[in-house]
Image (cartoon, rainbow, N blue to C red; front, side):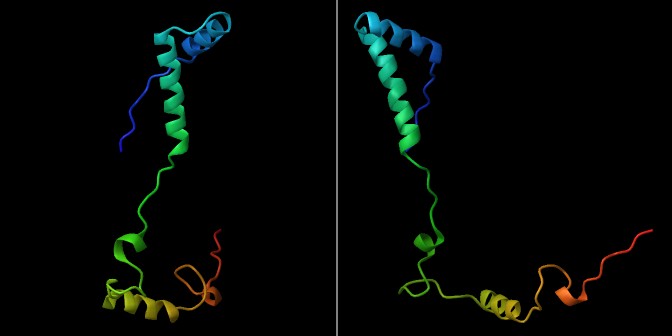
Length: 100
């Protein structure tokens, strides 16, 4: 559902509220305040969410889930054989560069 865009003039709303202290609101003034209030509630109350991969693809243990491909299985096997560290070189092979 697409949210409708509402232009809100805060100064005008402040004036309407100040006037409401002295006299009841007119119907058009009531509509302006009501529309602004509902737009604020809609913006705060509806958090945006994204689809989770598991809801689209299914879980591994669920029937009907997509099977693993060979490339993902190979990636898992090669990642287990990598030496510790997180860059191009293993932790023990790293040497700082010396510049003059």
